[in-house]
Image 1 (cartoon, rainbow, N blue to C red):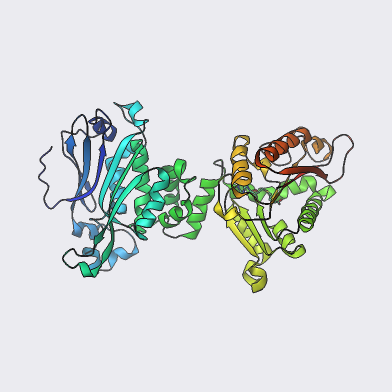
Image 2 (image 1 turned 45 degrees about the vertical axis):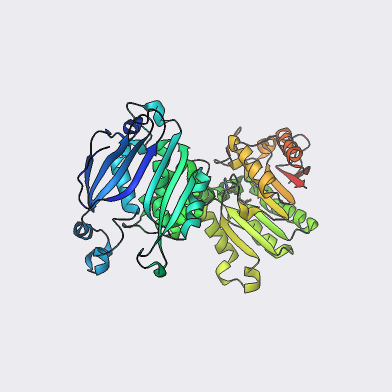
Length: 476
Ligand code: SAH
């Protein structure tokens, strides 16, 4: 136990492990357990002290000495200039807010990146670890706390802190006393805290700009894309800035680092030019709409809806009550909203349609309960290793009554006059299948998930090479 003589100190966070030897925590945090570490921050001095350090258990505490005047003086942003009492008397330094995140970043920067000079393997190993945060501002209470941390594998203990313990009648404050326990890498715990504490608080002491999106993706990249609350997290982390949030989600959900917006924009023109001489796009739309009409589907979801041509046709030519367009690209969705004139649509029509941002390769509750899903010229944009994730998300999880998939038939490419030999119809296509390849893929899926499948061609049917587009209709 270390005797530390910090005056009026406030405990923000303790991190403990029972991994043996527990003192390795010092190596992971790059802090010697035998010393008190002090770092100056704009809002005061932050100390790291080890309150216990033995073989069985080791606990590091982040303690802050607050300088409320410095806090206001150094405050950045437009509000920084106007004086108000609120700036001096506020909870910021005491609570586990974004100040703590700034501190975590500064104190444990190397640990956050998963590096440890002395214990590299341990930094990569999941160890029993817990974090205690005595004062966590939490908008939405314990329920939100659980929704954010439980999917990451933590067990949670939380008690609400009364507004004033001498006046219980005043009720509870918005602060929780929280302990998180789990088995993970130290780096994971730090990343989770770094991203999720400001999300719980739903406030930040600095202004968010586009670089915050980068920060969010850097710290959350691996786990955030599969977190069921990723939208809430991005929304709150980016301070409810819609533009930044959609940008973050698009980049998070896209399966590769290419900006899906750029790809989407280029797509329409390039492929359309190749296929135009046979007006394949029209024929494809007509074939798909024909299938939907025949099926009598009332609730239809168009996955990878792009600029919304099919959504427009479905609204016009079918009796669908509900048409949901989904695309990972925000720009594509904006284009679709413009094409459909969503903002000036008659209310009854408007109720029939919705456009949302989402990815085909992640389970998404919003995609459940549909009679039919269309996936038109989209699968070939997915990296082959992600096709399994697409299959599970759609055929195992969302499970629409019918699924209509179209994709190019690569055998036909030689017949397109403008297409150089051996090239695919679009730069972003990851593959184009032969008829045999498509058939095997579709038959396997149908068998695995209890669907019947029928395959047909769309466009002029060449005796040798088949039709330019192939279509599979799956039915439960
Ligand atoms: N279905 C439309 C657009 C096809 S282009 C049409 O037939 O015209 C492919 C579309 O799929 C693009 O809009 C692209 O943004 C979208 N897309 C690519 N990968 C995706 C993914 N993983 N999740 C959702 N949409 C995706």
